[in-house]
Image (cartoon, rainbow, N blue to C red; front, top):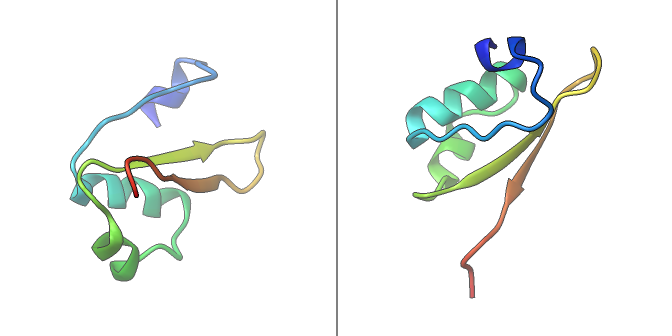
Length: 65
Protein backbone atom coordinates (compact mmCIF):
# COMPACT_ATOMS: atom_id res chain seq x y z
CA UNK A 1 0.00 0.00 0.00
CA UNK A 2 3.04 2.29 0.22
CA UNK A 3 3.09 2.35 -3.58
CA UNK A 4 -0.52 3.53 -3.60
CA UNK A 5 0.26 6.35 -1.18
CA UNK A 6 2.36 8.11 -3.83
CA UNK A 7 -0.73 8.74 -5.95
CA UNK A 8 0.74 7.14 -9.06
CA UNK A 9 -1.74 6.04 -11.68
CA UNK A 10 0.47 3.30 -13.14
CA UNK A 11 2.74 1.08 -11.06
CA UNK A 12 5.02 -1.81 -11.88
CA UNK A 13 6.05 -4.01 -8.98
CA UNK A 14 8.44 -6.93 -9.46
CA UNK A 15 8.82 -9.80 -7.03
CA UNK A 16 9.22 -13.55 -6.76
CA UNK A 17 6.18 -15.83 -6.80
CA UNK A 18 5.71 -16.27 -3.05
CA UNK A 19 5.58 -12.57 -2.27
CA UNK A 20 3.62 -11.77 -5.42
CA UNK A 21 0.97 -14.32 -4.46
CA UNK A 22 0.67 -12.73 -1.00
CA UNK A 23 0.26 -9.25 -2.52
CA UNK A 24 -2.40 -10.51 -4.93
CA UNK A 25 -4.18 -12.30 -2.08
CA UNK A 26 -4.23 -9.02 -0.15
CA UNK A 27 -6.41 -7.59 -2.92
CA UNK A 28 -8.41 -10.80 -3.53
CA UNK A 29 -8.64 -13.26 -0.61
CA UNK A 30 -10.12 -15.88 -2.97
CA UNK A 31 -6.69 -16.41 -4.53
CA UNK A 32 -4.97 -19.35 -2.94
CA UNK A 33 -2.69 -22.32 -3.32
CA UNK A 34 -3.93 -23.35 -6.78
CA UNK A 35 -3.21 -19.88 -8.19
CA UNK A 36 0.22 -19.87 -6.57
CA UNK A 37 0.99 -23.27 -8.13
CA UNK A 38 -0.05 -21.99 -11.56
CA UNK A 39 2.37 -19.04 -11.44
CA UNK A 40 5.32 -19.08 -13.81
CA UNK A 41 8.67 -17.38 -13.41
CA UNK A 42 8.54 -14.71 -14.59
CA UNK A 43 4.85 -13.92 -14.49
CA UNK A 44 2.84 -10.73 -14.94
CA UNK A 45 -0.43 -9.62 -13.36
CA UNK A 46 -2.41 -6.42 -13.78
CA UNK A 47 -4.17 -5.08 -10.69
CA UNK A 48 -6.66 -2.30 -11.41
CA UNK A 49 -7.58 -0.33 -8.32
CA UNK A 50 -10.66 1.83 -8.59
CA UNK A 51 -12.01 4.42 -6.20
CA UNK A 52 -13.11 2.17 -3.37
CA UNK A 53 -14.27 -0.58 -5.71
CA UNK A 54 -13.12 -4.18 -5.71
CA UNK A 55 -9.67 -4.49 -7.33
CA UNK A 56 -9.62 -6.30 -10.65
CA UNK A 57 -6.76 -8.80 -11.07
CA UNK A 58 -5.85 -10.01 -14.55
CA UNK A 59 -3.13 -12.47 -15.52
CA UNK A 60 -1.14 -11.18 -18.50
CA UNK A 61 -0.06 -14.01 -20.82
CA UNK A 62 3.21 -13.65 -22.68
CA UNK A 63 5.71 -15.92 -24.36
CA UNK A 64 3.27 -18.80 -24.74
CA UNK A 65 3.14 -20.76 -27.97
